[in-house]
Length: 311
Image (cartoon, rainbow, N blue to C red; front, side):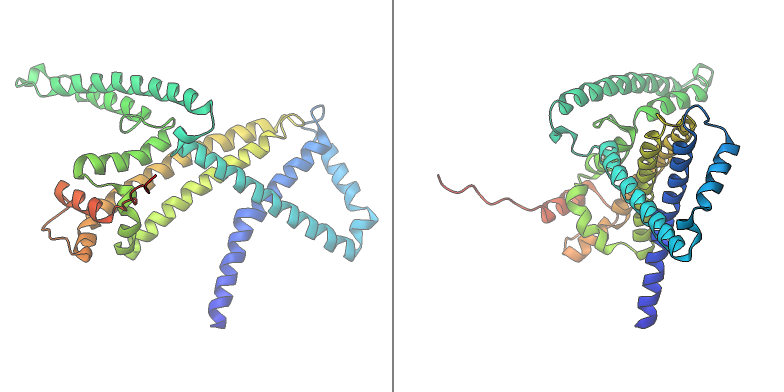
């Protein structure tokens, strides 16, 4: 048991160091450089070196007790910066996925609905172009068929807007929503209703992959949180601007990749293992997931609200 607690403590310490302290130390270093150099001497490395040397010679730093206090303060400040970045990242994650945007405080739903309609119009136009190319590709005479690259380019243009017809304001939110839309359309399966029960019958490997994909998505959002913190330094030190842009671009790419991987795994898990859940529930079936089986699972697992009380 002691070895188990020791291993668990080591993992927590490693996670705390990797996710909070180390990024926080880098942020504190950049913030210190910004405060020391300012806009006028933004790239004056010699000035920064002189200031660091001067601070290092102060009596409060040269004594052992002072060094301990300074080191503890730096670690605490770095961890605090990491906590703030995670909090900002959690807010960004909720905003990017936008699962409940229709219930957000006004006037956000009205503004977002206009953007969603604009994305829908763009998606519809690209979908029509792709369908036209698809029809041409089915021409009986091979000489009348256009270059397949044109059809693939039309499909890629549509996918860059959204995998399915947009219902949310962002690509990442629509990508996760697409998994639920496809399961509902193809198999009459309500993923929101079925998922809490389906997760319990998944193989450990697949469950771990889903957890890792979801964690990667959250970490990408935390990276966007760091970009926000670095943006706060731009008004004092302009070199923070390229750092902010780099972090924001990387976070955007990772959020999209994480949302895509997470959605693919959710859809894969439902299509492959929903029949196993039906077996445990005693629902008679044979073969893979079908619309009849999906509808049966949804009915079996749906919670009915009580009737309204009289009066």
